[in-house]
Image 1 (spheres, rainbow, N blue to C red):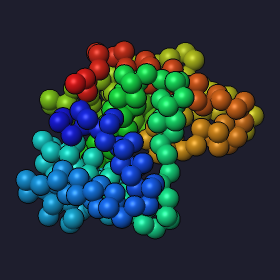
Image 2 (tube, rainbow, N blue to C red):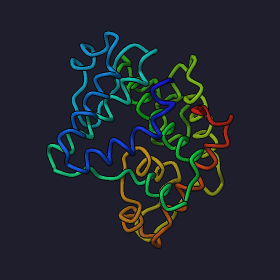
Image 3 (cartoon, rainbow, N blue to C red):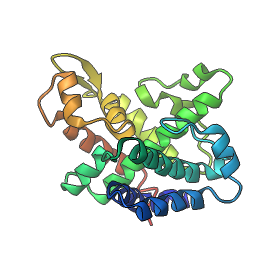
Image 4 (tube, rainbow, N blue to C red):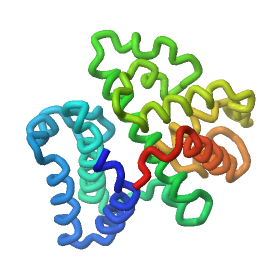
Length: 230
């Protein structure tokens, strides 16, 4: 997972560069995405990826590179269409000292694993089969049917999701909704939803979602050690 190994450094720098509005910075980010799609991946990527929240493509050996490239191209599109680039909530937690670098890497693994799970769900002839034995995995149910192979980070996130789904304190009961820890992590870490907005939607005190996300990704970071350690 060479592309993912340094993603914790690449992504915030790319967001910062695009947020500056400098055309040279934007060209540099585009060039980096193109470099990740070298080695024959460009045709498959262009043919199958609709920018936005889409499935990953390419052979399994290069799915991490297509993931990183797709993330960069999505950020570029966001900058071009809206004139701004939203921050990833997890980066805010890291910058304010709420999580460690190891936790940040774990959060990136969670987001990557969710993308892989969704990619396999779309590839399957019968997507429903991928959720078999998913149990209480919630938004991470597709991971139950993904072959782990050499992806140690995928095995790590799946083990973490299973543990989270079995926790006695997994339910978060607000004045408007009752959700699970995995649901909140999926909304914030995978979908990039504002934690403050999520607190209001569920009907819990301000800071509840942030606390839940911090504890959850910290538990993930402790599962089988950091898979993206340099």
